Length: 158
Image (cartoon, rainbow, N blue to C red; front, side, top):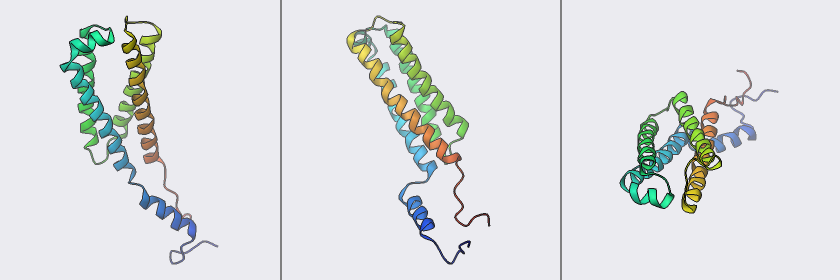
C-alpha cells in the first residue's frame, strides 16, 4: 500500500528531521569554500609580507615564497568570490578541488624528488600544509557530490 500525503510514515518524518538538522548543501559548500579561501588569502599574504624570513626558515628561495604567496592570494580571492555565489557552479567548485589535489601532489613530489634543499622546518611545513589542503578537497568533493544526488521521493513515483 502506498502511503498518502495525509499519512506520514516514520521514514518520511526521519528524513524530514535529518533535512532540518543540516544546512542546505549549497550553504555548506559555500562555507567550506569560504574557509578554504580565508586560509589561502591569509597564508598568501603572510608569504608575501614575510618572504625573506620564511624563505630562510623553510630553506627555499624567496622567489619561490613570493610565487607561492601570489598564487595563494590569487586563487584564494577567486575561491572567495565563488563562495559568495548563491549556488557556486559545479565546474568551478570542481576546479578548486583539482587545484587542491594538484597542490598536495606537488607538495609530496617536491619532497620525494628533493626539488629544494629544505630545512627540517621546511620539510615539516610542506608535509603539514598538505593535510588541511587535502581535507578541504575531500570535504568540498563530498559537498559537491551531495548536491548532485537526487533526493529520495518518499511517495514513490507520484
